[in-house]
Image (tube, rainbow, N blue to C red):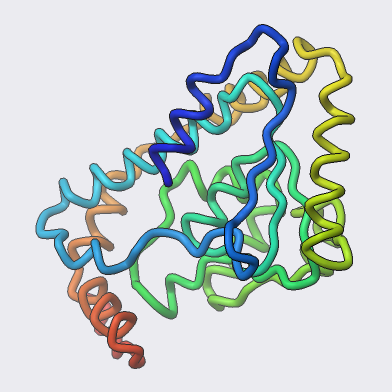
Length: 228
Protein backbone atom coordinates (compact mmCIF):
# COMPACT_ATOMS: atom_id res chain seq x y z
CA UNK A 1 0.00 0.00 0.00
CA UNK A 2 2.76 2.41 0.98
CA UNK A 3 4.70 1.76 -2.23
CA UNK A 4 1.57 2.05 -4.35
CA UNK A 5 0.72 5.40 -2.79
CA UNK A 6 4.23 6.72 -3.35
CA UNK A 7 4.26 5.50 -6.96
CA UNK A 8 0.91 7.13 -7.63
CA UNK A 9 2.13 10.49 -6.38
CA UNK A 10 5.52 10.46 -8.10
CA UNK A 11 4.22 9.27 -11.47
CA UNK A 12 1.22 11.56 -11.71
CA UNK A 13 1.04 13.47 -15.02
CA UNK A 14 1.19 17.26 -14.86
CA UNK A 15 -0.50 17.84 -18.21
CA UNK A 16 -3.85 18.70 -16.62
CA UNK A 17 -5.39 15.28 -17.19
CA UNK A 18 -5.50 14.73 -13.42
CA UNK A 19 -6.57 17.65 -11.23
CA UNK A 20 -7.06 16.04 -7.80
CA UNK A 21 -6.74 12.73 -5.93
CA UNK A 22 -9.14 11.28 -3.36
CA UNK A 23 -7.76 8.75 -0.87
CA UNK A 24 -10.18 6.48 0.98
CA UNK A 25 -10.14 3.14 2.75
CA UNK A 26 -11.50 -0.07 1.28
CA UNK A 27 -14.08 -2.19 3.07
CA UNK A 28 -16.16 0.41 4.85
CA UNK A 29 -14.60 0.05 8.32
CA UNK A 30 -11.44 2.13 8.23
CA UNK A 31 -9.44 4.71 6.31
CA UNK A 32 -6.27 2.87 7.33
CA UNK A 33 -5.21 1.38 10.64
CA UNK A 34 -1.49 1.66 9.89
CA UNK A 35 1.38 -0.77 9.58
CA UNK A 36 1.03 -4.53 10.12
CA UNK A 37 2.48 -4.78 13.61
CA UNK A 38 3.72 -8.34 13.16
CA UNK A 39 6.57 -7.10 10.96
CA UNK A 40 8.06 -5.29 13.95
CA UNK A 41 8.95 -8.62 15.52
CA UNK A 42 11.72 -8.93 12.94
CA UNK A 43 13.40 -5.70 14.06
CA UNK A 44 16.76 -6.59 15.61
CA UNK A 45 18.85 -3.42 15.35
CA UNK A 46 18.51 0.34 15.43
CA UNK A 47 19.10 0.36 11.68
CA UNK A 48 15.97 -1.74 11.15
CA UNK A 49 13.97 1.00 12.86
CA UNK A 50 15.74 3.83 11.04
CA UNK A 51 15.18 2.14 7.68
CA UNK A 52 11.48 1.66 8.45
CA UNK A 53 10.98 5.26 9.53
CA UNK A 54 12.96 6.53 6.53
CA UNK A 55 10.72 4.55 4.20
CA UNK A 56 7.55 5.92 5.77
CA UNK A 57 8.99 9.44 5.73
CA UNK A 58 9.72 9.11 2.02
CA UNK A 59 6.18 7.91 1.28
CA UNK A 60 4.68 10.85 3.18
CA UNK A 61 7.07 13.27 1.48
CA UNK A 62 6.06 11.89 -1.92
CA UNK A 63 2.42 12.38 -0.91
CA UNK A 64 3.03 15.98 0.10
CA UNK A 65 4.97 16.65 -3.11
CA UNK A 66 2.09 15.32 -5.23
CA UNK A 67 1.53 18.04 -7.86
CA UNK A 68 -2.27 18.05 -7.46
CA UNK A 69 -4.45 18.46 -4.36
CA UNK A 70 -4.95 15.34 -2.25
CA UNK A 71 -8.19 14.78 -0.35
CA UNK A 72 -8.49 12.24 2.47
CA UNK A 73 -12.05 10.90 2.71
CA UNK A 74 -11.95 9.29 6.14
CA UNK A 75 -14.45 6.69 7.30
CA UNK A 76 -13.84 4.84 10.55
CA UNK A 77 -10.45 4.13 12.09
CA UNK A 78 -7.61 6.39 11.03
CA UNK A 79 -4.72 5.50 13.31
CA UNK A 80 -0.96 5.10 13.24
CA UNK A 81 0.38 5.11 9.71
CA UNK A 82 -3.13 5.73 8.40
CA UNK A 83 -3.41 8.90 10.46
CA UNK A 84 0.01 9.99 9.20
CA UNK A 85 -1.19 9.56 5.61
CA UNK A 86 -4.34 11.57 6.29
CA UNK A 87 -2.31 14.32 7.95
CA UNK A 88 -0.07 14.57 4.89
CA UNK A 89 -3.06 15.16 2.59
CA UNK A 90 -4.09 18.69 1.65
CA UNK A 91 -7.74 18.38 2.70
CA UNK A 92 -9.54 16.02 5.07
CA UNK A 93 -13.25 15.27 5.37
CA UNK A 94 -14.87 12.52 7.40
CA UNK A 95 -17.94 10.55 8.33
CA UNK A 96 -19.17 10.48 11.97
CA UNK A 97 -17.32 7.20 12.61
CA UNK A 98 -13.87 8.81 12.62
CA UNK A 99 -11.35 7.64 15.24
CA UNK A 100 -8.07 9.48 14.66
CA UNK A 101 -4.88 9.15 16.64
CA UNK A 102 -1.64 7.48 17.60
CA UNK A 103 -2.24 5.35 20.72
CA UNK A 104 1.37 4.15 20.75
CA UNK A 105 2.01 5.09 24.40
CA UNK A 106 -0.65 2.52 25.34
CA UNK A 107 0.07 -0.13 22.71
CA UNK A 108 3.55 -0.31 21.18
CA UNK A 109 5.97 1.89 23.05
CA UNK A 110 7.57 3.28 19.89
CA UNK A 111 7.54 6.93 18.79
CA UNK A 112 6.56 9.26 15.99
CA UNK A 113 9.31 10.72 13.84
CA UNK A 114 9.85 14.44 14.26
CA UNK A 115 8.50 15.27 10.81
CA UNK A 116 5.20 13.58 11.70
CA UNK A 117 5.04 15.51 14.97
CA UNK A 118 5.68 18.76 13.09
CA UNK A 119 3.02 17.96 10.51
CA UNK A 120 0.46 17.20 13.22
CA UNK A 121 1.43 20.30 15.21
CA UNK A 122 0.77 22.44 12.14
CA UNK A 123 -2.72 20.94 11.91
CA UNK A 124 -3.88 21.04 15.52
CA UNK A 125 -1.23 22.65 17.70
CA UNK A 126 1.68 21.19 19.64
CA UNK A 127 -0.23 21.08 22.92
CA UNK A 128 -3.01 18.92 21.54
CA UNK A 129 -0.51 16.61 19.84
CA UNK A 130 1.22 16.03 23.18
CA UNK A 131 -2.12 15.47 24.88
CA UNK A 132 -3.40 12.82 22.46
CA UNK A 133 -0.08 10.96 22.49
CA UNK A 134 0.42 11.18 26.26
CA UNK A 135 -3.14 9.97 26.94
CA UNK A 136 -3.37 7.64 23.90
CA UNK A 137 -6.89 8.87 23.23
CA UNK A 138 -8.51 9.03 19.81
CA UNK A 139 -10.07 12.15 18.31
CA UNK A 140 -13.68 11.72 17.16
CA UNK A 141 -15.40 13.45 14.27
CA UNK A 142 -16.94 16.52 15.89
CA UNK A 143 -13.78 17.35 17.82
CA UNK A 144 -11.76 16.90 14.64
CA UNK A 145 -13.95 19.46 12.89
CA UNK A 146 -13.82 21.86 15.84
CA UNK A 147 -10.02 21.89 15.93
CA UNK A 148 -9.60 22.11 12.15
CA UNK A 149 -8.23 18.61 11.64
CA UNK A 150 -11.06 17.98 9.17
CA UNK A 151 -13.10 20.56 7.33
CA UNK A 152 -16.41 18.70 7.12
CA UNK A 153 -18.31 15.84 8.78
CA UNK A 154 -20.72 14.10 6.41
CA UNK A 155 -23.69 11.98 7.54
CA UNK A 156 -22.40 8.61 6.32
CA UNK A 157 -19.86 6.94 4.03
CA UNK A 158 -22.02 7.38 0.92
CA UNK A 159 -22.37 11.12 1.55
CA UNK A 160 -18.66 11.30 2.38
CA UNK A 161 -17.58 9.84 -0.95
CA UNK A 162 -20.05 11.98 -2.88
CA UNK A 163 -18.71 15.11 -1.17
CA UNK A 164 -15.11 14.00 -1.79
CA UNK A 165 -15.83 13.73 -5.51
CA UNK A 166 -17.57 17.10 -5.47
CA UNK A 167 -14.65 18.69 -3.62
CA UNK A 168 -12.15 17.15 -6.04
CA UNK A 169 -14.11 18.58 -8.95
CA UNK A 170 -14.17 21.99 -7.28
CA UNK A 171 -10.43 22.22 -6.62
CA UNK A 172 -9.90 20.83 -10.10
CA UNK A 173 -11.33 24.05 -11.51
CA UNK A 174 -8.80 26.21 -9.67
CA UNK A 175 -5.49 27.51 -11.05
CA UNK A 176 -3.14 24.48 -10.90
CA UNK A 177 0.05 26.48 -10.38
CA UNK A 178 -1.47 28.43 -7.50
CA UNK A 179 -2.37 25.19 -5.77
CA UNK A 180 0.96 23.52 -6.53
CA UNK A 181 3.04 26.46 -5.36
CA UNK A 182 1.02 26.77 -2.15
CA UNK A 183 1.49 23.08 -1.36
CA UNK A 184 5.22 23.21 -2.04
CA UNK A 185 5.86 26.45 -0.16
CA UNK A 186 4.15 25.05 2.94
CA UNK A 187 6.11 21.81 2.66
CA UNK A 188 9.40 23.71 2.34
CA UNK A 189 8.61 25.85 5.38
CA UNK A 190 8.26 22.81 7.58
CA UNK A 191 11.24 21.04 5.98
CA UNK A 192 13.44 24.06 6.75
CA UNK A 193 13.11 23.40 10.48
CA UNK A 194 13.61 19.64 10.39
CA UNK A 195 15.44 18.21 13.40
CA UNK A 196 17.66 15.16 13.89
CA UNK A 197 15.78 12.36 15.64
CA UNK A 198 17.64 9.14 14.81
CA UNK A 199 18.70 8.79 18.44
CA UNK A 200 15.10 9.04 19.64
CA UNK A 201 13.86 6.50 17.10
CA UNK A 202 16.66 4.10 18.00
CA UNK A 203 15.99 4.54 21.73
CA UNK A 204 12.34 3.52 21.41
CA UNK A 205 12.55 0.79 18.78
CA UNK A 206 15.48 -1.02 20.43
CA UNK A 207 14.01 -0.82 23.92
CA UNK A 208 12.68 -3.68 26.01
CA UNK A 209 9.39 -1.78 26.16
CA UNK A 210 8.98 -1.92 22.38
CA UNK A 211 9.26 -5.71 22.36
CA UNK A 212 6.95 -5.89 25.37
CA UNK A 213 4.45 -3.72 23.51
CA UNK A 214 4.60 -5.78 20.33
CA UNK A 215 4.11 -9.06 22.21
CA UNK A 216 1.23 -7.60 24.22
CA UNK A 217 -0.43 -6.10 21.14
CA UNK A 218 -0.29 -9.32 19.16
CA UNK A 219 -1.47 -11.41 22.12
CA UNK A 220 -4.20 -8.87 22.97
CA UNK A 221 -2.89 -8.37 26.50
CA UNK A 222 -1.88 -5.29 28.49
CA UNK A 223 1.83 -4.34 28.37
CA UNK A 224 3.73 -3.92 31.61
CA UNK A 225 6.11 -1.05 30.78
CA UNK A 226 9.60 -0.98 32.32
CA UNK A 227 11.00 2.30 30.97
CA UNK A 228 13.96 0.40 29.54
